Length: 262
Image 1 (cartoon, rainbow, N blue to C red):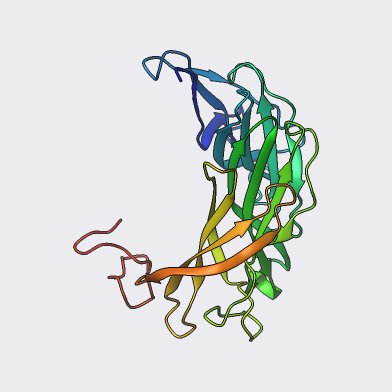
Image 2 (cartoon, helix red, strand yellow):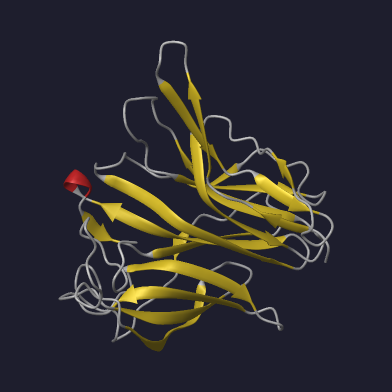
């Protein structure tokens, strides 16, 4: 219980002799062995990637740590970047040393192009070498236009050495708003997997409920711990009042809070 691990988008800027700025952004492990009183930062190998981001961390019962993050490639000073892959690294010594990142899912295309933009990944772990990673699979059309965003999941049962092929898990229901019509839940994001006391896996996420103002609803599915596939749901938990007209708009055209520019 004294061993804790966090991570963050760690941007590093370096000025070259020629006056240009080179940038990396790697998800490093921030580790404590004294219940959070002191912390040490440890590196993770992301060979082949210029940048990572939006990390999440979990421990299984054996103390193996799993850190998942997004992996990008970009050219310095030429704009951003390839659509991200989903990466997972593991540590068996509390976060001091980490395996080379495994690619759980591959993106395709680049920012603003046709392709698959993987995003908003999260991880839960349990038992002896078991973990599940979930993420949003944004399908982009011409000019990066939105097509759909189903939730995907992948599982490991060997401590992160191998992972199942990612597959859509949100399912269908009468209250779902399918991007292509129908009731398939494929306008989703923000998935969070959790492990119940009996070993069941539950996945909660936001799903668009109203195409006129993009209000969401909160849904939950139950997943098979062995395969990561849906075994029940989706179940509707409640409505979310977060549509385009439900908040004030900030100076840069985004939703904000009253009397603020955040």
